[in-house]
Length: 146
Image (cartoon, rainbow, N blue to C red; front, side, top):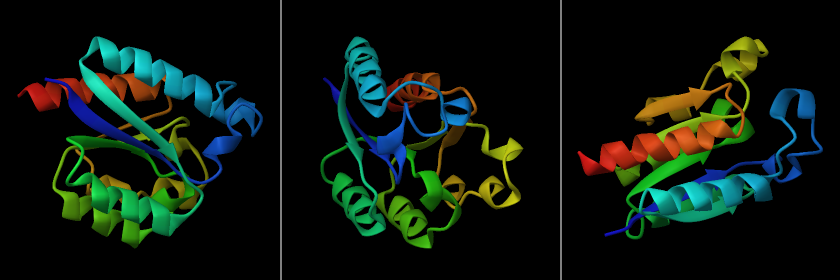
């Protein structure tokens, strides 16, 4: 039976491929979505891939996922470092959460090194570019099979 994975992408990730490719890589969000869909299929995971620039919408999606999904992969982007609301929503859904970042947030500016999301995450993958998403899918496949 297929497990449902919600993949949430935060603000400005719709600009991937053109926004600071030296930091975030040249893959577009559509490229990452296709990669996740293909990889998820091989793991018997159904992928629901979304992006928003709106913190409230992100919180609503997380809350709604409790009834419809088995796990979350989240790249909250800037909300990683600022949003207690996203943290509280992730804690409330009580499901596995993998935090993903394209760049290594621990090598970036000091304000980017703190993650509110980490407090709710089962694990974090950062600094491996788009590959971080497929690694997160692998981790969730193992976690959900346990």
